[in-house]
Image (tube, rainbow, N blue to C red; front, side, top):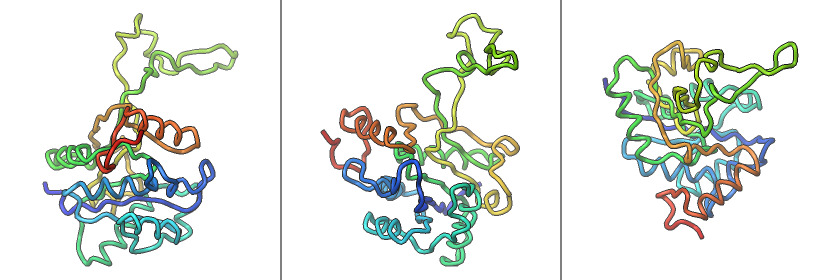
Length: 248
């Protein structure tokens, strides 16, 4: 079942309390949003990539980076507590109206997760194309610790207990089955699932998992996150192919 043409959406609202103006803050000499724009340009499978924003400043920076911001997000979709799903549905509706075409799938690229690579996008698209039962593909990675083994809760009596009851069945860390976390690097959904569902329904509808290394599962939401990403790039621990050279 074809999922082409693919519409990529980069959501970037103006308000950010954890790290003000983070979407346009320079990372390795390029505004953070520019990394997602350049990634999309390296993916021939993407028919069109647009930025969804409520900010004139972000739209201008996106255009300077070679991106498109053909519409503005309404204010009721730009609040601190606005879920991403209606933002994505709004972008799909706007672009199908502007382009007078029907897209077959929607790719969500968060600007705060710049560690995904073109091959990740290609693999996600192949996975969804080859599985007619799946409605989407979600990027996930194996964290450096296994929550089944180390995570605890505080019981009513104030003593700790394991967060995952089945954790008590394992005597060694090496025996615990791997657990993956959704890392935000990318999400890909069939068009009709986005248009007709009120939520992603990760566990109600079949979703495939795209595994990417934890080292590239970057999620920038604070000054510390930003600094760590800078250091990883400077030290060559990660490399973005859209940058001419790894900064030193």
